Length: 438
Image 1: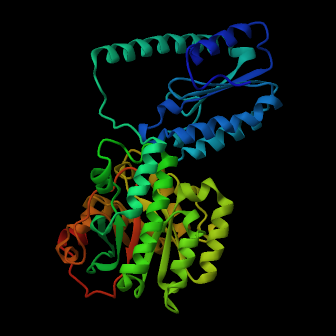
Image 2 (image 1 turned 90 degrees about the horizontal axis):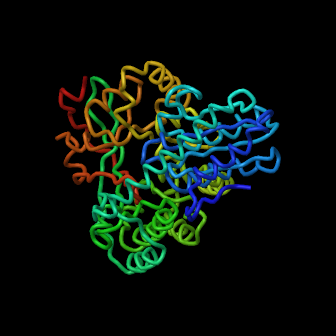
């Protein structure tokens, strides 16, 4: 039996404490684990990921007479009887992988600030009871703070998420709107020490930020991941329609499409595919988001086989240095992997993290990786150090030699962008400024 996770007239923390107090004379043979999702970075605590994490332990409830508690701070507490450490560790590892983008998951358990805390209640009952009591006290303080903020009329800086009804209105508006003025281009180029840069292709996408400003400026379109995914599926279809009807110059050249897996299996994609010229598919790359791939691996494998049989190439989008170890490029049938840069990757205090990244770059293939979101020269220098040669980001946009090849890029919103990548004919070889050649 799980604790309520909806209305919280009686807090889950209070329910947990009551449950722990009743275990005082029945603690022997019981174990507990606390998953500290509250320690994740705010952007990584997505609501649907938390639901999946809770469901991971649901299978153990009946098997080990378990109880699940989802706390107000998003931590998960699971208490069970006669469960093996291996069974619990397997569940914890699956949850850890779900949040593998966050630095928290790279550390060990049972250390200060770690991802999980374990208790053998036969020996650590008093410690577990003290923890439960502290959670109730913290929840009381949190409610008082929220009440004080509500009474003062203060409002936080975050925009509210879209409601399903609003999403329906937005989808209707998109289906009839001309989105060509929201297309943005950004160069992806090859850089090698001592050589001038070579523009490989240009990513052309529909800016979610511009779309939000134009139609619903007071709402965060990407706040709810599942609604945002539905929105991107709609934008996928609009982009395919635009390519079929008004962008013949794109279809006549090599380019890439950033799509959802479901879009590749849709009638709209089949219509797009049917309109391509003979031999054109070999120059087309389909970019698929890693979350979309792993959320339904069966659908991905079906879409991948279909696309590769037709001659398309596949790129995994939105990887990080922390998720790269979990990516088996060959088994997934990937031609390219796009890794998002973050300043944390260059942290000199984490030599082990840098060594692991180097090892994974070699395993995936240096020539198969694109380091994206490079907003500074430091990002490019970092990539070159590890043998990466393909880059994308605002720093590249500012290079005079490449600026003429693409429009100035706009910042990518946290929820991501959708659209196409246009690969132009081979450009003249421009000269990279000295600062970019080091």
